[in-house]
Amino acid sequence: MYSAQITRANPTCIVLLIDQSGSMSDPFSGDSSRKKADFVAEVVNHTLHDLVIRCTKTEEVRNYYYISVIGYGRNVSTCFSAELGARQMVPISQVADYPLQVKSSYKRVSDGAGGWVEIPVRYPVWIHPAADGKTPMCDALRKVKDILEHWLKDHPHGFPPTVLHLTDGESSDGDPDEIGQQIMSLGTDDGAVLLFNCHISSRRAGKIEYPTEEASLPDGFARSLFQISSRLPPNFLSAAAQLGVNVVEGSRGFVFNGDPSSIVQFYEIGTSLTGMTPYRWMDDDRRTELA
Amino acid sequence: MSSAQQTATWELQTRQLLLPKLDHEVAECEDFIAEDAETCRFAVTDGATEAFDARNWARRLAQNWVQTHTALTAEDFREWVANEGRELHDSWNSLNLSWYSEEKARTGSFAALVGVELDFKTYSPSWKAIALGDSCLLYCRNGSLLKSLPLSRPENFNSAPVLVASDASMHETSMTSVVIDSGNCNNGDVLLLLSDAMACWFLERFEKGDLDPNELLKTKEDHELKRLFDDERLAGRMRNDDLAVLRIELISGE
Image (cartoon, rainbow over all chains, first blue to last red; front, side, top):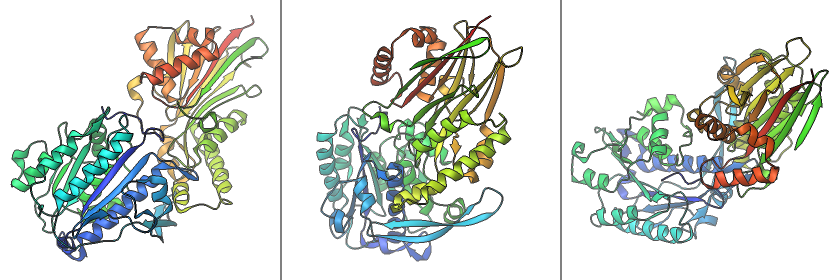
């Protein structure tokens, strides 16, 4: 299970599901200058950048992945716009070709001889921060289920789809347990759909990362998200371990009261798929600063 | 493809087999095999699938390494790779790249390399090998595996080996993983230079002792080997990867 080779003939899909409710405009982790929505948009753009780069073969992007980015708040809809806006699921080659803009900057890197050099880097942007409305989590999960059912009809044998869900609060349209369980019951020959949840908090509350048991969780909301979080398959456990994250067999793909550093790791682990070495786009210095 | 090279008293019988991943074209294969009769050098390289221009990097490493006369030391190897890497990066300057190709190119290219040099000029013929990555030399004598390098067990193969980087700024750390080894040659010895999936499969066969891989490569026709390795990959007993095999049998004329 979770060992199917991801190829152009046998691609997989990744759904990034993002809470864009009004509370996402609150400051993040005690930092009044930074909104949660800003940080999440930055991480999602970096994640898409990473996925494109992974599929880049010299001058071509190979369609190993199909991507969906769904936001929920005032409504539930794709976060892609412009050329990508009309479709729920986009091949990675088109994600590569149609960012909204590509920012340029410089990055300081080691020159390998004890010094530093500044090299040009590109920061493509596909999604902008958004924060408006309530938290229609159940509606959003229903949309994801619909997208996955269509995908699975055409791809019954590939590496199972991965859903990375990020939220900062409780559902405003009911208990997500039932629809979450329905999503987790879908799958391919190679395993069930992987649904991972990351809850983030405005407060510097004690974070809980990749727990194995719900008894350790503080309240019913946390337990309900735990219940709809898949166990991390071995490949993902290995990627998490490479990032220095404390996981064990049975750890769920679930973070509660996550801080900025948790979000970065959540996306890195969640997109490691077949166990590839996670792409560390954020410098260690900045991780330490965020932790 | 088979060929024979003759030294004063030794004949080298070589055989190559190169297969792309299942459902891939030969032109997409990122494994390379090279041999040079003059230097008596042989190499197998394997471009990292995720790297930029990996096919060109792997080809450059294989073809140029067998033709060079640089000494087989870690220092000389590092200097030689740095030069090759510079030339590869220079070749990208004229390209008009998209943002993603530019980003990918920034990290350079990567490939595994295993090379061996045979020396029959001395009274006691010998071999010397260099390797970085997970392409391997399996040295066989009388049907048994005498040595395997740089990896020796099937469980050593993972998806993140240290490879030959085209960007010299990575050499400080990566070149510490270079493996160099040497030994004497006997009549009938067989050297197998193999890219990773094939090396892993061969090591498993040797451990299980359920067939003689040497005989397999010696006696089967190319189309039979292709069918066998396709079946093994389809069945999941061998990773679906590009496959490179270079078999060298040493035959003494004395």
